[in-house]
Amino acid sequence: MTRQELINTIKTKQSFLCIGLDTDLTKIPEFLLEFEDPIFEFNKRIIDATHDLCVAYKPNIAFYECHGSKGWDSLKKTMEYIPKGIFTIADAKRGDIGNTSTFYAKTFFEYLNFDSVTVAPYMGIDSVTPFLEFENKWVILLALTSNQGALDFQFMTDSQGEKLYEKVIRKSSLWAGNDRLMYVVGATRGESIGEVRKCAPDSFFLVPGVGAQGGSLQDVAKFGLTKDCGLLVNSSRAILYAGSDENFAVAARNEAKKVQLEMAGILQKGNF
Image (cartoon, rainbow, N blue to C red; front, side):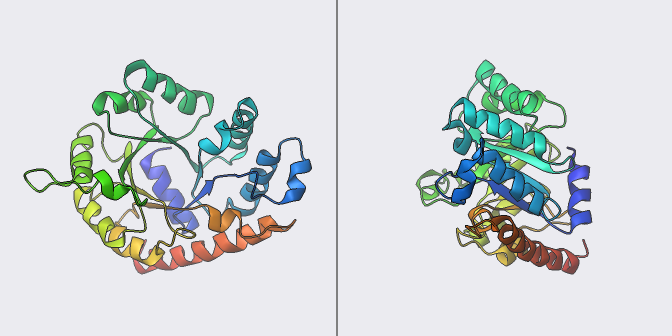
């Protein structure tokens, strides 16, 4: 998916909602366990209930690969079921050099046909560029995350006062343009989103941490919104597990609708 296609989808749906398909067999409604593929059945119903309200789906790969070949089958079926025109994110956080990254890229871009993959930048340019060799595919680089351990390294400063996450953005912006490169920026650090936005004024941010993790959608928009929206805000647990009985998909839709309506209001205020 191109940048303009993504922007058009956001405008049409008046939404910048990304739904994380972090499907946990211990949390899905018990009746689904009777199905041949409970993970896919859960995802299918979530997608049916929410595809008109979101612009992206983000399966967290760990929730699938822990089940071995069955989990990979569930993931592939899920990817094939997601309607065309919805941006897809492989939340894999891969990062290695040379052929290893190339084969990671082939897995997610060719075999599974994702639009994008999250990548860890620690090993530098030769761990990222193999992902950028695939046409119309995106790299979403970890920049400033929302976990407590982010404080261990990401805010470290050099002798010129530049923070590590700032250095990551500045350096990586030389590898690709904002039509191929996004950044992960955690929602639980509202004002920090504004600082990241100064470093990457026109880039899209994938923003986790809204919903169950306590991030504020209004703060994210206040500090991160651009003329092209520039945001994909992810919600996983708050939507997926809004209900626990046979009507779980209805509950998920109701929760997603609340978020979408709030997003529509934000976009309308910004004349988007």
